[in-house]
Image (tube, rainbow, N blue to C red; front, top):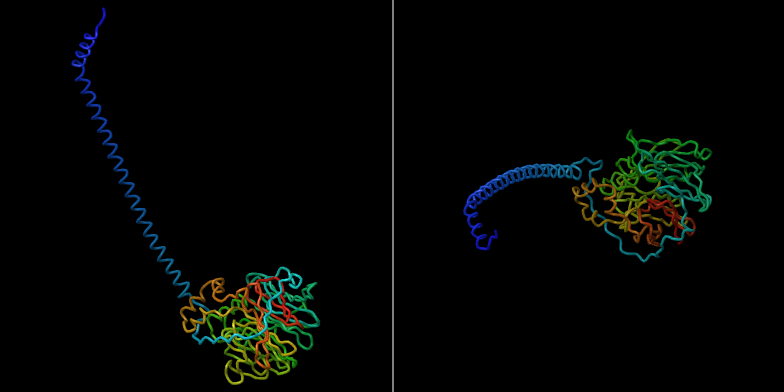
Length: 437
């Protein structure tokens, strides 16, 4: 039996009328259940999202509280570190010195020829240079910490180097007396010491001669000179601690300007110590003119060179008997040296700092600077590579004869004129530099 098109339509109509309502009801119930399930899922998601939002808010609030606590702790630590932390040398107000007018001195530049740079090996710094019998002697040290530092007295002629004496700590200065004995200024964490090494036992034994004055340990010793009469003059930077070495003590005095530096004289015959000059803002260098019987003393903070009779006692820097021979220097003076013509060579530890001297009357700001790290302090007055490293001045006329500059960046820690050449020790350099004059 064949079904026509009309019959098929009738069958579909009867089927739709018979089962259509039931199918529609089933579909409606299914859609309702699906909608209810979707709504429940949406409610669950909303609840979960609300819980997550609440948890995030709680974590954020905790983080904000911790951040506030951390910020307050960091601010308190910063205030403590930069304002309240005790410092060994509270700064004092002072009047910044004037700058000298530019001079017409001849210019000389440190040689960069490797043949003229004397390598000293694995040392980290040179604190003193001397010459004797045509040989050059240099006090060079190793070790970043003074507790682990050793210093050697190195003798060289530019080709060969030999260690003739070693000490524990930092050997900041040395000088020969008429008998050939060595007088040494040594720094250890316990303080400074004036020592002697007999000429017949160099390297074998070093005798401690002066370790304290009036019951108080010596501070950082910076230089030593010996007169023809055997008397030994030595410079003390100030009352600052010597625990971090000479460089640190000088930097502290430069920022604090306590004016507690002094020069003393030791008489080996009488075994007595007397003060020659006091009230120096960082006694950083010493030179003795035997012909004029005059002491020249570097005053780091005052940027000047004091002069006093070698026989004087109990003087005060700037007072009667101790006047400034050279003032307004372009940098902070350090080591001094005299040649046969009584020309005085002045090395500069650091360049003059406009910030530091602009705040000479602010003990607060300089107190903050005193609490900074040494590297940050160094940035306040570091000596640039093209800055004046040293000068040669006439003690007779007071005129500036030479000015020296050079590429090695770092403070000039030592210098020594030898005939027509001047040798330099540069902080952080493992060699002796030189320049012809």
